[in-house]
Length: 491
Image 1 (tube, rainbow, N blue to C red):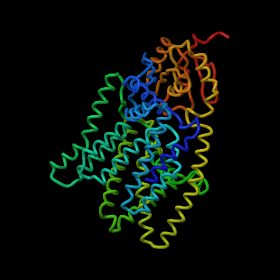
Image 2 (image 1 turned 30 degrees about the horizontal axis):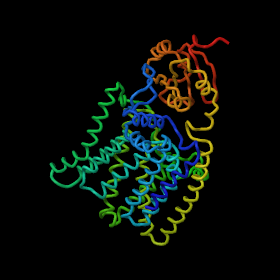
Image 3 (image 1 turned 90 degrees about the vertical axis):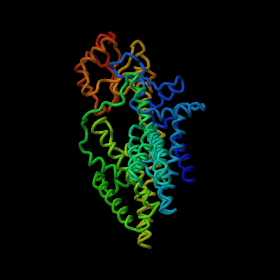
């Protein structure tokens, strides 16, 4: 439990300036929905599609769980960003404690190294310097995997924990699948297995039915499904991710600049070999170690399947990065460290020597990167809190001169709201009717703000400008603002 306390205090300690935790587009939706829920019991956000006349919309792109938790903490008197920081810190404590408990069957040393490695991993630290739902989601995931291991027959508990994860992130359906699969793998008659699978899946089904009905009533849509583009370079992305998580960037640059893909493949291979080698030991074939490995592998397989399917059929903007694969990275780290300790124990002094050298060298490199990264973020901010936005002329124009216009249009409407207080509408995405947007702009004129860089699904700014009757009014290195030609004031 000491590691959990270190995690909570550590997260509070690294977010020590007014620029942290960082705020991004997802954060704005979570925070504003939480404020709305606290004030009136609805999950509404000040960001709408360009075709809508309303200035607010029902939260739909994300489920309501994280916002509901934030709202509960805000009721204690904390402002939104402070509430998010406390939720993030407490979630980190749950995750680190859960890792220790999960690995404890492999020995106290393995549990201690796993918790310590997580706390010192630069990517893990970076994920707690901004307002994401991932820390809370990872906490629900860890509780679910622990329940699968330690309470294998309590399927209703598995179902409730899986539903809690789904309420925080839609990808939490992976937890539901894992709970259902584990229920089907239990012994007993077909009827008993079916009952176990039903208990594991029904809470998530009830949540989905309730939330879908609520969103449909508001006129929103959770996701638009169909074959999506964007699966190119996936193998390289995943291999690079395998290097990004365990290997500090400074160490990567020193070892092999530009070699992330190959190094990642090596890391994956070494980790797989360690787990395979350790799994041959008799102790790994006995409970509860066997249950840990089985539950972790089932969850990771379900999670990977859901993420890849989502990228293919729901959202091509899903990045294959450490944030998205957080649960898989944590669980694979747990297995790799447990395997490394087992292998070192079986090899005697040479094994312990190699493990000690690797662990100490990694800890030094990781600690240095964490210190530098935390200092930089607290000094310069992150995402929308970056100091460069404070005096940006485009945003200053929106604050000082956009009041006569009914709305603001932008490819980053959440940023517009967070930094200027103006409700904003999105710009057209690839595949949407630009001519219809032009007519909407005629009916409801307002500034069109492009924030760099564009998303993969955004219509290229110049292509959009060429189709609209707009004129550039002000620009900067990070943004540009256009007004409908008829609205541009005479010099």
